[in-house]
Image (cartoon, rainbow, N blue to C red):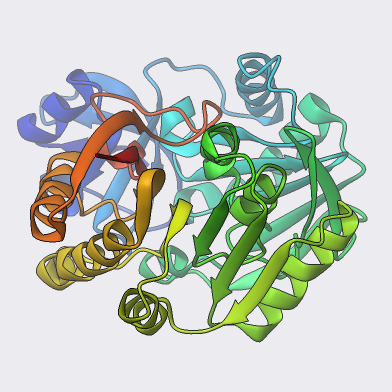
Length: 385
């Protein structure tokens, strides 16, 4: 089956964006998901793509060539992505970052000798066998787990499932980053078991933590930022609403022989108000909230939420202290995020110095012509006299 697209659809590929939407598909004779050749209305060949007949994103470009898309093709592409990441120096890292690596809707993370992958489109799901074979050939793992439980699969007409595709993958894997150990949960943790995209930011905040000072980690989850803070600060308060997450965080602290973290179950918004009321101060604050804007419709409310937590964090930041703040909401652009921080700084009455802007870790590459790959924004700030 060949799918034909409009001139506007063809232009998107020409400009380097791999997606063609339903509105730009001219002909789709057989609505069966798979890997299909794509042409323009005149029959000019444009490439081969993943085809998802139930999705607004109908086509995702794989290659402009006519080569067979088989297990060997996946082996070569996955292997090339892995080689680009040589020298990361962590035992948990992203091997394939979907569109960022030219393999749309495919996510592959490596936890020690185990692989956790996500197949996020119907077109890719149709090639599951070849993709798994490609992972085995390229990475030689002890096990492959498919975390196909991401919400986006619903839009593709796909089931939510967690499936062992090869070998064995344990419930918990110990990983090391920048000298800090923590337990990832491949079967049940957020994303594929841990937040690998913040790895470099955690190390950055660790380096800027005031020795002997007081630190605060809001939305701590399993304590990933708190562990880095605790190596330098005298005391750390790690906050989350989830009892289960805090228990895993405490387990991670024990794993590192760290005893200076107070694990506090609380709503971050409520706690910030309380800390401000009590005039408490912290020398280092890490603020890593969940995505407040899941859709564009939630943008205004999300920005208000980001402003409130950042404003209150700025008010309890000690003089000379540093605040690392981030947003993983794609719909909150970097410009919008920076403008929100400027508003918060003005309202705080503090002089807030910009130190650095960051994104996701290097193994989560961002493509300039595919803005969807640049979802994570981080900013390091300092309160000055």
